[in-house]
Amino acid sequence: MAHPHASETQPNGPIPTRPDDLTIGMYVDLNCSWFRHPFASKTFTITSDKELTIIRGLGLDTVLVHPARSDSEGAPQNSHNDGDGRTTAAPTLPDTTGPDTVRCDTPAPPPTIVQYKESLQQANMLYRQTVAESSQALNDIKNGSESGLVAAKQMIHGLTEILVSDNASSAMGSLLGAQELDDLSVLHAMNVAVLSMLVGRQFDLGHEAMHALGTAGFLHDIGEQALPPDLRHRSWASMNTEDQKAFQQHVDFGLNMLAQFPGLPDDVLSIIRNHHERVDGSGYPARIRGDQLSLLSRIHAVVDEYESLVNTPDPLTTMTPTETLSKLYTNAKTKFSEEVVVGLIQTLSVYPPGTVVALTDHSVGLVVSINLHSRMRPLIVLYDPTVNQANPHIADLSKDPTLSIVRSIPRSELSQETSDYLNLTKWTGFFISSSLKTLEEDRAA
Ligand SMILES: [Fe+2]
Ligand SMILES: [Fe+2]
Image 1 (cartoon, rainbow, N blue to C red):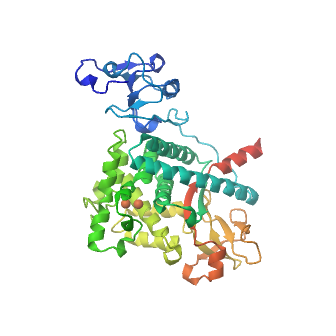
Image 2: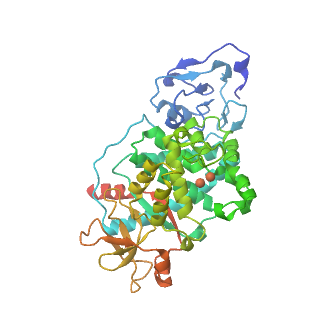
Image 3: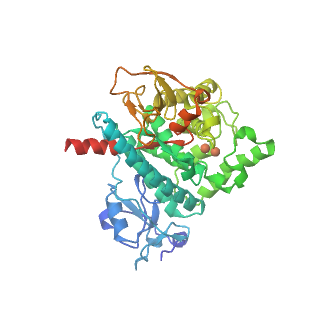
């Protein structure tokens, strides 16, 4: 076992060491960004060959070895010491973290309808799997387990890899039955993580900033887990002053929970600390103003608000995505960063996933994708009562220049039959799928 506090009494300082010279039992400080390595913390005792292999694959010239904290006899397998004496499991990501590189692939042609349907099925399977894993990760983090943080990091890492490649990105509004979700907060966490990274693309953010947005998006409301159940998932307007005060505490509760993970970067913590601040100083808890809010915090705040307004327990009585964007744009003069709201609108287009639209041929349908190559021409599930709802017709506006969207339709204008057919009672989530790229590669092979 390592000696976590030995360095306080011994003079040995850290020694820069080449990764090839590392051995099991050494207490290392990777001395690089949290986002560049797959571990929960950058300081730990090496306990396995797998960890050695991963460290050597990071492309680092040297890491720091702390002799006083290292165990010359080697440390037990499958244990991990984060420097404060706690011993926890040390799960790691697959070895996919290399030097920061951004792929600049050429855009792939849009998928065919058949490919879309296949990829949507794959995406929905992946989405369900990710929801389950995310739920477990949030629960583990709440309980102070590093394995949850590592799992979250893995998910965000995977999403970032997809998002930085123009070729692979295809954001889908993945329709998921509300009854399939144990906890609305998991969907909110995933949606905010994904959508804030999508908006981050508009601002040409680098890898680290994208990672920070995704990680903070996933973790920002974890403090709600410490609130009484009846306070969670309530709209702000439905709370009295006392409830609102109690609810506001979730920001501090979250920061306290995350203090168990000393490796979390300041950028992530800052976004979480400020996620309810508003540019006019009307937010909470510190009522700081726009000029003190980083771009990442301002992006997160807009996306968090959008997601909260669009995905509520009763989608039929809430604003449509289009109405929500328009409300945010109105408020952009005071509460939100206007450039970020514009970035969100550019990301989602004026017809975001979940929007019911009228088309030029008088048909009605539900927008189910973000077409990152041509935002006004998404895929649309068509309402047609003569066609089995389980296998509806899909219009791909990117393929059919004769068909265009005329307008979005408020849900109050829809008949019950149309609402039921289009599954409007289901949640709309954002999911990034690289399966379209895979299909294209398979076809080209
Ligand atoms: Fe919050
Ligand atoms: Fe939130």
